[in-house]
Length: 238
Image 1: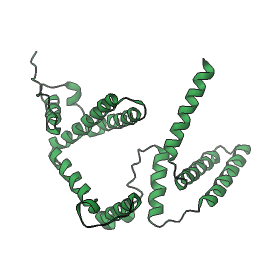
Image 2: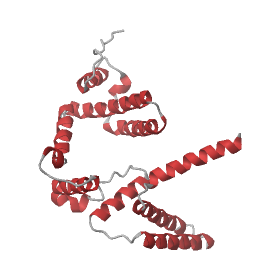
Image 3: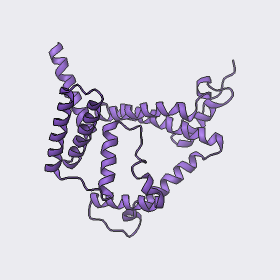
Image 4: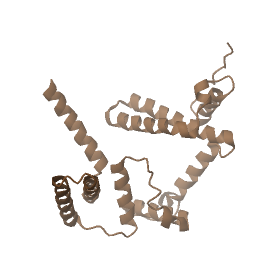
């Protein structure tokens, strides 16, 4: 059986890209050869979540390992497009470098900012200018559809608020949450099976907005609540 000499262990993106090219070559790995952007995207998401878990619970060595797995998926995906002649890994690095320099005029230019919040607001303005006329259509649509629903709701309502959509203040949202609970309760009491999911969704969305106004991210808050529940469950089951 013919084998391929592996690339020398290196510390650059180019080394990793060469490894992918060898795996995709005629004498490479059958599994790697058959992959497409469509098949790779699920692994990309899985690795991203594993990085998040390592950041919360893992050691630095585990975080390093999971970051490597995620980086490999990113490089693999870029190499698939490189094969088609669409863009190269160098293009990916160049585009993001240009973007980061452009969006940090307070570091690489003469723009002055007072704090992190002003940096965030200025970032949004630059992003709007980059998108131009497309932004009116893509402002909310550009939030990835595959994000977890709570995270997506937080991002969408945050962007809507930045663009001038006025939400009630905290007391107003509390009142809307109470009203949503009342509507959900009535639908449940009437056994309105088609109405319950709608009312529940409205309630969850209002809770996300409330969390955002209180400075809490609902995705993180729910994850922490789940961890507390798991610990409580394990103690009771012991």
